[in-house]
Image (cartoon, rainbow, N blue to C red):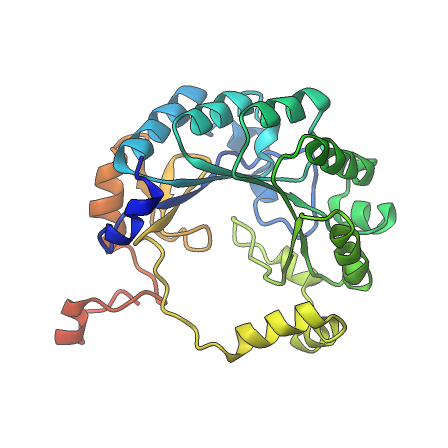
Length: 303
């Protein structure tokens, strides 16, 4: 593991941060979810085993990875979640967990408190049970989510709440933000991006807000509007996925990022070092930074 004070001295290509989709299984069926199409037994049976995950995780630690985000699906839907989580924390990673919160019990909250994560991020997509459960399609999920928030805050576990803005909840976004503000130190994130489903389906886009609707929503809140203006005024930066950040899917595929799975390196069959330093540099990304060779030979392109 690399010490934080050594980060400025690292080479340009170095595996600092990993987002790991440890499962596509989930206890909810959120209407905008892009992984739910793989939330089926035939796909679950293909997911990495506990031993495979721990072996790959040790390879990441040996290579110097500092940040590890465990996501899904719902990562806590795996029966071995705490075996994975606690191994990651003890290995020295700064661990972030993305969860819907509905599976968190007092026992789970105690385990998080005993080995604290860098942060837990819980999706809160509605201020009322009606809106929340219309999105999650899980009866009682709103109350279970809020109970998880309370359990974790009572134990001083670092927490952030986030919402995906969509047609079904735009009327409650500001109420959600006010609720989060009432919690004190809890961070709030509003996401606007919809992604195609992993099997290529476009179901999530049925719930996407238009640019006009997003602008109208953001204008209603000073902080949201300031952030929106900041993002719109900034020139888009070339993508650097695969340089210091990378993605691993539920089946052991090493990829540039969760949004670019066109190419994948099989970590079940090969080593992480080989995958990161030899395979990833050759993966295509139309948003990537041009290499020196591409500047000299314009006909060579990974676009």
